[in-house]
Amino acid sequence: MIKMAQNYKVVKSILQTEKGARMLPENKYLFLVDRRANKIEIKKAIESIYRVTVTNVNTQIARGKKKRVRFALGLTPDRKKAIVRLKAGEKIEIS
View 1 (tube, one colour):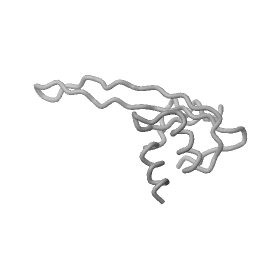
View 2: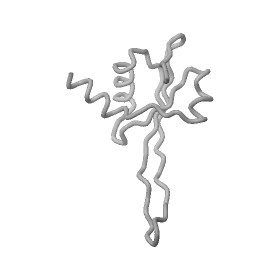
View 3: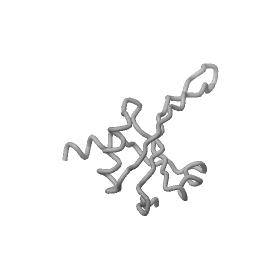
View 4: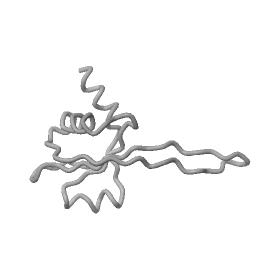
């Protein structure tokens, strides 16, 4: 049970964006992951949560943007995204 909780700390959510929708025919999925997670941890977590076989993981860090709130400048938090390719014939149900 503890291991499953750790998987959900690594993989925060699946991102449903236009870019993510364009990657679905190529059997690729877009996930929001923990900034400290590496590709091996991401692969193991997704295989455990969704019961699929991951063949490739690419990651990228999206830097936070400057935002103005009244008179002060703020910064949105940095995010890490993972693009995951699954084995041919497997898929993840997105609701």
